[in-house]
Length: 338
Ligand code: GFB
Figure (cartoon, rainbow, N blue to C red):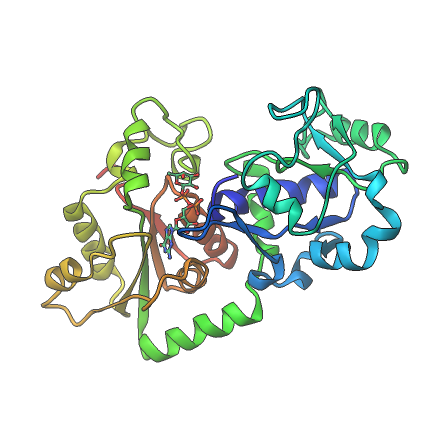
């Protein structure tokens, strides 16, 4: 569901679930959408992440290895059953219709997978914290069910608070790490840098209109709490005004004299000129990637000396969790209210 940040939240839940029911997790590819292309494309899990670190927590195998080396013997075509909570709308009645629509069809087609049957697993759920529930799964789906292939991630969005810690096993691939380190060395050497995430594209402007009716919109629980116990969600937390952004950056720079660069990650407007103008009397340089690369942006944000992100965005949430796992400091735009 959704793009990278949403999928990463789901991934942590699915990881906890697979451990809960004591099953090897087949690491799915990441689903991406390219401008001008109708069908989703699937990027192997290990293009972005190092699978070895996940093995410290649980048994995992990439989908590519699973399909090439193992599926033919333990999951032959006639045993391919799709799992969903209850029937899903589509061409076939009483079915998961696992391949109906995008990204579903292109996802399974990438591996030439067709399903012979559907299995409705309701009323079971995937709350890995519920030990009885995990036992029920193990009992109901024993050895006769070699593979549980879900139509959607067996996980919630945003990530359950109990699963946030699993982020520490999600380590960038060597390729991404190398690229991020060489960018930092080339463009931000000799001093600290502040990483900022500006989520401000048109889709976001529209989404933020829902703040009034959705006090826990998207990833907002990461700052306001899962029950809004830490504060109220406001529209400036979702879409901070430019002046507030500049004021907040100045406050951080005042406190962190070692910072001489600002690395800006954004889906749309990096505000490079505005930031340069506002900070022209300081000796701080504004830096951004030359071309759009969300994963490289995230890997760099994860290494910044300090980070300011958007509390509502699951893209920020990824960077924030990674930084928390490393003990690096972060804050959110316009939160808490000053
Ligand atoms: O990651 P994501 O689920 O985060 O989706 P949100 C936002 C996508 O926008 C990312 C791009 O996966 C990137 O492709 N993007 C966002 C960025 N920020 C940056 C950035 O700093 N740098 C680069 N290069 N790309 C939610 C969606 O987005 O937005 C929801 O997941 C919904 O499903 C909502 O569409 C409107 O949580 O921010």
